[in-house]
Length: 139
Image (tube, rainbow, N blue to C red):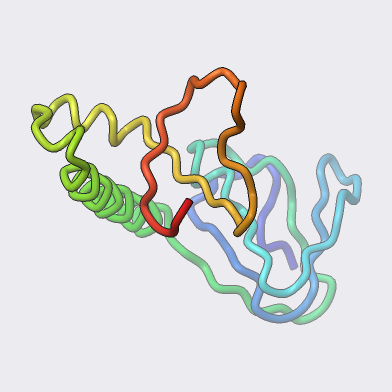
């Protein structure tokens, strides 16, 4: 049985809970999907038709997430992250007095990076083109 058929509209994102699925594009086998793999996200993210077909190899069980629910979750997550970053930036003395619109623009450009203990963040002599704010840890 097909879970997804190529060319059809896609309104759900899936997670394979049990079984095995094969992925076909134009009737050519591309890959197999194993348990706990997410699939079908392209149609949800880009509002396009299904780019491949997904067929059950054996009995399968999937979890499905509707497009509107997924978008609502992503929107709320982004709003919460934006608020968290804004509050964090307000605690940085250099940025504390910036107008709200400027602070929001900085929040929109923030990228979180992680470094392991002992790893170099910057090196002497390198061109400095990035402004770092330490959110957690010591350097």
